[in-house]
Length: 320
Image (cartoon, rainbow, N blue to C red; front, side):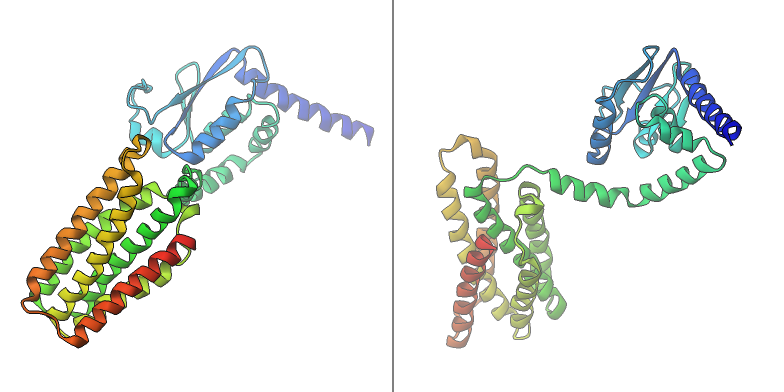
């Protein structure tokens, strides 16, 4: 029993030493995608560790930077798509093989490298890595949302209401397009849908996921109905509804613009809000011009309800 234990121990240390010998007197260059939040976090862990041997050293190259000098014979797109390391003799390793080579140089991680040298282990790691690459884009999106800087509390409520409003606007035009068969209304809706989607994308880029409204599914339903219902009654009802909505939105943005005037630290946000406000006013004015004749009492009542509903939605979005 002692003999078998001794033999197992000798074999283990022999494997351990073989890894160190293979990586001795070598510089390993780690090629990583610095634009990927997942990669940055993982590489940060490796960068905080010292190689096992003084004869080993690691260098890190961010291949996402255009000024980075890439190894000859490789394309930037290839290095961004998969994890790579380059050995001191110029050999490029990719995927699981690259991870094993890196782990073999690092304390704690070398035992993973030892396990990976077992028969069939590295191919299994490569299979898992390729599966990870398929869901990597979705994981990157979540990671970017989680690491986005938070908006100051004094502005978060307003931006949350803007996000809710622009979400509703996008779905108003989708509701119009789902119901109306009038060529003029459809052209109007298609053009303005593009603008509203650009507003929503811009606000989403500013407002991190953690501070967004939790009621967005409700705003989508409310927006769709606000567009679909008047579409049942014809173009005049559609244009009157859009005018009512955009009239409220103009006042809503103006309130925020007044708060940010003269605050240079929020100059970019002010410019975004002014651009959104200008577009919404153009939508309002175009809708008013297309109505053709004044709205009747029933349509006026509907527009009043739409305006009041917009105000309630904004207040809810500020808080939730």
